[in-house]
Length: 92
Ligand SMILES: [Zn+2]
Image 1 (tube, rainbow, N blue to C red):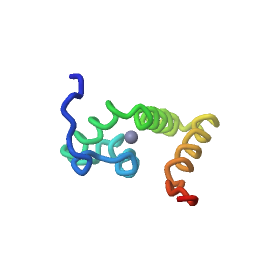
Image 2 (image 1 turned 45 degrees about the horizontal axis):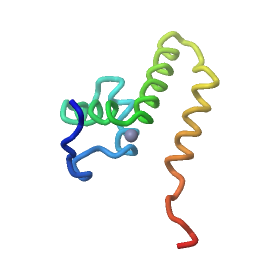
Image 3 (image 1 turned 180 degrees about the horizontal axis):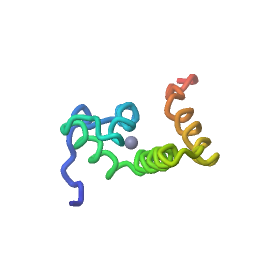
Image 4 (image 1 turned 90 degrees about the vertical axis):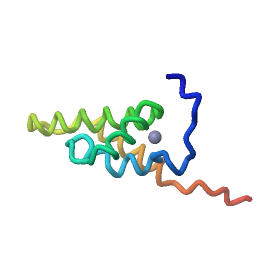
């Protein structure tokens, strides 16, 4: 698959939509249509792919009753800061 055929952006999950369901996705609690969208997005989007791996690492730590590694927590904070920052250019 080379990804030559692009779906319209409205059909494709945006990063923030993926982030909203990523934990449910990890827990296998999303319905199959959404799970498919997320899986698709994770393949295309390196940033969300990394985020998914980060959440998976946290989930694993929690399952083992460990605290998530410091580095992982910081990574998530930075990710959200970046994602939630308004994209508007005040000088425009
Ligand atoms: Zn993404």
